[in-house]
Length: 345
Ligand SMILES: NC(=O)c1ccc[n+]([C@@H]2O[C@H](COP(=O)([O-])OP(=O)(O)OC[C@H]3O[C@@H](n4cnc5c(N)ncnc54)[C@H](OP(=O)(O)O)[C@@H]3O)[C@@H](O)[C@H]2O)c1
Image (cartoon, rainbow, N blue to C red):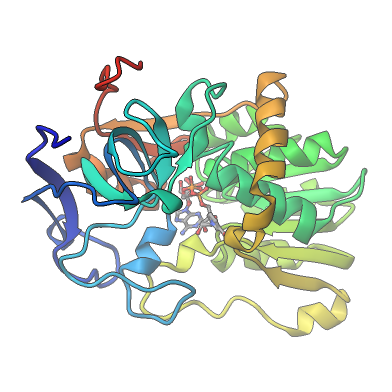
C-alpha cells in the first residue's frame, strides 16, 4: 500500500563545526520520502533526542562511530510511529525507537527498530530513563563504578540526563551522594535526584565546598564532564577509588583538550579509571530497562525532561544543551501521534 507522505523535512550538517557549533552549521531541507521495501518500515518521527555525543559525530577526530559528512542528517535516537510496514513484526500505529535522526520521516530496516513497551508512560521515557541515558547511568555506576553501601559517590553533570539517574541509583545502593552541576537551579534539581549534597562548580568557593563535602574522601567518581571540575575531584580521592569515565562534555568543543588529568594520581590513590560505552552492554538492555522501569513505576526514580517544540529548533536545543541550558533530558518534539491507518492511538 503506497502512503500519502511525499516530503520529509530534515536537519542536516551544513558545515563541520569548528569550536562551539553555530546556526550556520545546520540547515533544514526537504526531500521526497521513498516507500519502504521488503523488510523495511516507514516511521513518522515524533520525538528526537539531543545529546552531547552528537558533537563528536560532527568532528573528524577518530572515535567509536563513523562521523557525519556535510549534507548528512544529524544522527539521533528517535521515537516514532509506524506509518507503513513491510516487516511482519511491525504494524501501522506501533511506537518504535531507532537511530532515525533529526527528520520527520525515516525508512528503516525492521531489525534496526525496537518497539516501545506499551506500559511506558510517557513513551518518551524510552529516550531517557528507560533508554540510553538511564542505561548509561545504570551500567556505568553498577558495573564500572561498583559502589558499596556507605561509599561516597561524586557525580559531575549531576542534573543532566545521565546524572539525574546516577544520583538516584547510587542512593538506592545505600551510598552517600554528592552532585556537581552549574548554577543554583540545577543544584536545587539535584536534591530531587537523590543527592545528599549539591555543589555549583560555577561558584567561586567550589573547591572549598568540595573539600568540605568530601571530608571522608571520594570512593567513586562518575565523570560526565572532565576538565577543571574533574581536576578538583581527583584531588579528593580515597585509596582504592574508582573513576568512571562516562563523558567529557567540557572538552567537546575545544580544539585541544585541557591536560587536567595526571596519571600519577592512579599510583598515589591505587585508583582504577575506566571508560565505557553504553552500547557495550546491549546484550543486557532488557535487564536494565526492566529494573529502571520498575523504579520509575514505584516512584523511586524521578526524572525531568527539557522539551523544545519543532524540528527546526533542534540545532538551538543542541547548542543550548552544550551551554548547560537544559534542565533534565533535552528532547525535541517533532510531531503528534496520529490515529494511523489502523486507528491505533
Ligand atoms: N559513555 C557512554 O556510553 C555515554 C552515553 C551517554 C552520555 N554520555 C556522556 O554523559 C555525559 C552527560 O550526557 P547527558 O546526555 O546527560 O547530557 P546533559 O548532562 O543532560 O547535558 C549536558 C550538560 O553538560 C554540562 N556542561 C556543559 N559544558 C560544561 C563544562 N564546560 N563544564 C561542566 N559541565 C558542562 C551542562 O550542565 P551544567 O549546567 O551543569 O554545566 C549541560 O547541561 C556527556 O559527557 C555524554 O557524552 C556517555
